[in-house]
Amino acid sequence: MRLIGIIKPYSYFYWLKKLILLFTNGKVILMLEKQRTIRKSVSLTGVGLHTGTTCTLTFAPAPENHGIKFIRTDLGGNPEIPAICDYVVDISRGTTLAIGEAKVHTVEHVLAAAYGLQIDNLRIELNGIEPPVGDGSSLLFVEALLKAELVEQDEPKDYLIIDETVMYHDEEKQIDIVALPLDGYRISVMVDYQNPALGSQHTGLFDLEKEFVSEYASSRTFCFLSEVEQLSKLGLIKGGDIDNAIVIVDKQMTEEELQVLSSNIGITQKVTLGNNGILNNKELRFKNEPARHKLLDLIGDLALIGIPFKAQILAARPGHKANVEFAKMIRKLYQKKKLIRKYQHVKKEGVIFDVNAIQKILPHRYPFLMLDKIIAIDIDKRVTGVKSVSIDEPFFQGHFPGQPIMPGVLIIEAMAQTGGLLLLNSIPNPETKLVYFMQINNAKFRKPVVPGDQLVMEVELINKKTKVVSMHGKAYVNDQLVAEADFTAAIVDRENSL
Image (cartoon, rainbow, N blue to C red; front, side, top):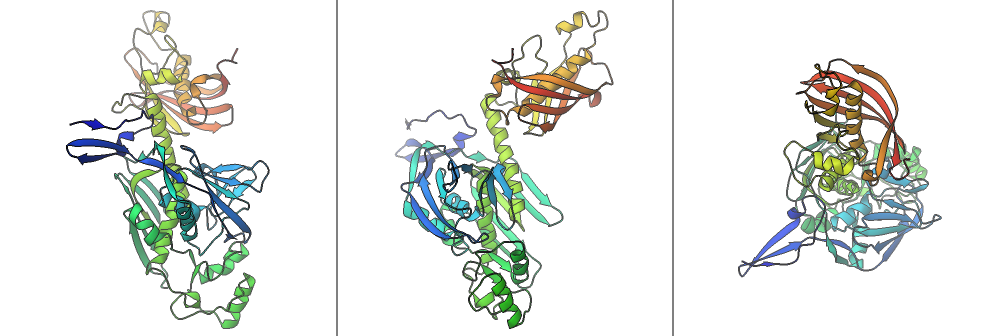
């Protein structure tokens, strides 16, 4: 059996999962799934759903590993906004991204089109604040992208393989979203508004390549008639009309009341309640079109994870707020896996970073490295480290002869070194930085730590500014609290630290 093909070294996690095995005449051909962009630029113009402003949107090719970015060409400097959940600033009936003064409203339908067509790298240029609404679905954007022609690039896709259950739950709104391990991409959605005009609906996408364009891209946005007036008062749906949204009749109105309402929101067409439960007797494209549109929104919002992923997603009553919060959870999982892969080259059960990985990150060395391994980390929140205390520690020679006790200040140092790992995600090239103590408060030492003890340090990030962090640390031996402290530290460049 002969191996055909060249596998390029790739530093990200689980890249082997992306290999497709093709058996031909006794030979094994290894093929990597490649990144995608578009061949040429394409533009479209229309009115935004919520702002009512006219905007021209241009899809343009982007290089490998560029990702998807929105570019406001009407603003000075053409500011870019990566399509990442970190930049979500509003979820009022849509998902809004912003960096500084640059903002783009209602990005979910555009992103659903890009993700549904499995495009990895794309420049989305806009000369306004909100993409055109089209017919309220992703169809306008899908057709434009297909016209621009999809092309493969040389670099392989960097998939996030979700290998653990991730759950989001909103008790008040009864929203549940769950990601389950799966070597593929599937989404199932259930909606139940406890309203006879809509009732309970469900839908499921099982093959992105085969089903997205034909079964989901054309599913239109919807709202209830009872919501229209409130949305208008909130300054939303300024570009809405009966041709770009399904309005479900959930209350009775006189013809006069209906015309006043339509006039208030700028609809010039004649509006009637109809008799099929939808304003003006609009026909649904699918019997469960509202549920399908919720799935479409979910695809677009989860595109804000910023990387293609493999998992089964189950969602009950999803909405933009829940979708974005769930995307943030998945993105943190991605960042954690990426960091582990960067520093921990040998997988060890129950270990996030071993001492070799820690020495790639922290500058400390014997006899002042007070950390053996990291066993848990929640990016930007908390970290757990372990220090096995040995009689061979040099400080035991003088602290104290005949009665060795670990100095309390070194326990705090061990907690601080553990806390340093929390800065990995927020600082470019953390291995080039040093962390200096600025303040230690509320230090308490409850039990002595002696040779043979295993010190478990739990450190929580309290506050983080550009170059200053505040943390709270606790140290345990056999689940008993032995020390704790609050500490503030400054982050400085190693080269400029003297």
